[in-house]
Amino acid sequence: MSQPAAHHWPLAAEARYLGPHEGTEPIDVTVVLRRRGNHLVPAAWPNRPRWKREEFAAHWGADPADVETVRGFAQQHGLQETGCELQRRVIHLRGTPQALQKAFGVQLGRYQFDAGGPEMLGCHEKPVWPSNLSSTVVAVLGLDRRPVARPHFRRPSATPSITYTPLQLGQLYDFPAHTDGTGQTVAVIELGGGFTQADFTQYIQSLGISKVPTVTEVSVAGGTSQPGGDADGEVMLDVEVIGALAPGAAIAVYFAPNTNQGFYEAISQAAHDTTHHPSVISISWGGPEDSWDAASLAAMESALQDAVALGITVTVACGDSGFTDGESDGKPHVDFPASSPYALACGGTKLTASGTTIKSETVWNELASNEGATGGGVSASFALPTWQQSSNVPQGSSGFVGRGLPDVAGDADPTTGYQVRVDGQDEIIGGTSAVAPLWAALVARFNQQLGHSLGDPHAALYGIGTTAFHDITQGNNGYYKAGKGWDACTGLGTPKGQALLTALAAMPANGNGSTTPDSH
Image 1 (cartoon, rainbow, N blue to C red):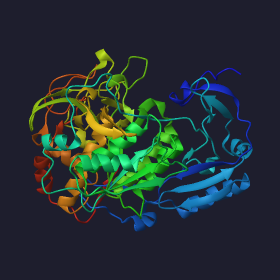
Image 2 (spheres, rainbow, N blue to C red; image 1 turned 90 degrees about the vertical axis):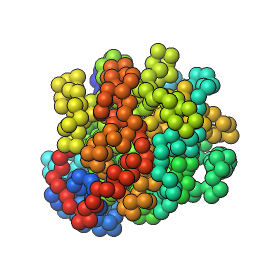
Image 3 (tube, one colour; image 1 turned 135 degrees about the vertical axis):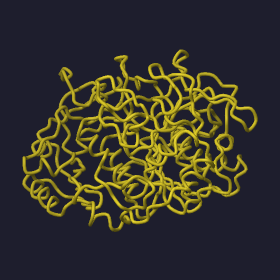
Image 4 (cartoon, rainbow, N blue to C red; image 1 turned 180 degrees about the horizontal axis):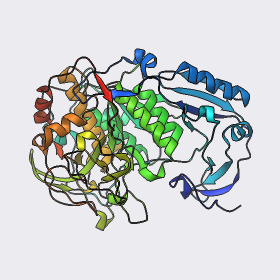
């Protein structure tokens, strides 16, 4: 059977269609519901979370009446409810492929990315539901199991002469002294790969850190730590950068399948985790913004919005393929979830140092030698936020006045990469994947010193401006150029950690958790 002519998931369209799904095993799907109430989001930082996780459902979770409507729909179609969490606005349903196809108007198929590779469940059509559910249901996730994201790390083609430990970068970026993230938990989202405790312990001790941070593995939607593959480089880079730069913090790694369902569930479960209580979430995975279907994008955005409302800072890598984000049309594209206004989007630089002083720092762009470049540009899905109004964000290619990214940056060039340990070997890794955990560790240290969570930092960081950053003014990512102030290559710049903390501490915290209508 031939490949369908068009598809509403462009990234998933890279897979070859093999024919209709013929299995009879039940399939689990996640139904994401709208939130109740007046849909307010936290005001500009500084603020405190309006509600504790335990209180969230009553104020911002799903409306019980909406749940009952979906339950009636499920019963009508012979679908079994396997779980319901009002605070996360999800109902988990299970049904046979035939029942799900009939319920949601889809045709399930078998897809394959590489010849001889595993077959994956997918569907060509967008799920549909009755009119009485159209305003209630945000998305149905799990009917398509093809990958939605890629890890944003890069190994250099040859061993570079300039490399750094995370501790050296923490010193160059002046991470505030007498802080180590004590009392904080950093959540790390992983859509593949595995964690090896022995490597992590050896690595941390090799840096002279006596107490090895606690790393807890959390299984999400059946995902587990599976060491032995290429994505181990992503997992170990993330936990080693955080463990080295915030050794007092606990680390919780949420392993989920690389699907729209898995990615959503990982962020949502981390945000609402009443066991580990993360104050920071680090994400180094993503895909081109236009590769996401509208429903999946809306569901992911709602999970990120939950995190911010709960006072969590979400740091996200911007991508490693320059202004195209790896797309083949030669046009500017940005990566999601980095492009979300609720994400602290992290771009990349090339850094050289002399001792403990930065000698030069430019935009990471090694496209000419096939060593990657920082992502960055203008969103085609999310409008320009209020906190970016004065940043001279360029107009998007379609004329859309969109959110600019990245917000901040850090060393990412694999030719000035990070010394890490993966699968028993010491190696060098770069990519914006390193910058998200670098900033996550810095935020954990800020939280410790401030005595409260930074939460959504955008308004504060843009208000403080480049005085607390190393302003990167040289280089480009293949389309956008660096310049004075914010730019679409390195954002506001790389951190001057202590200066940034001092500026944040000088801003009076708004203790009443006031909210304003969603301005994003």
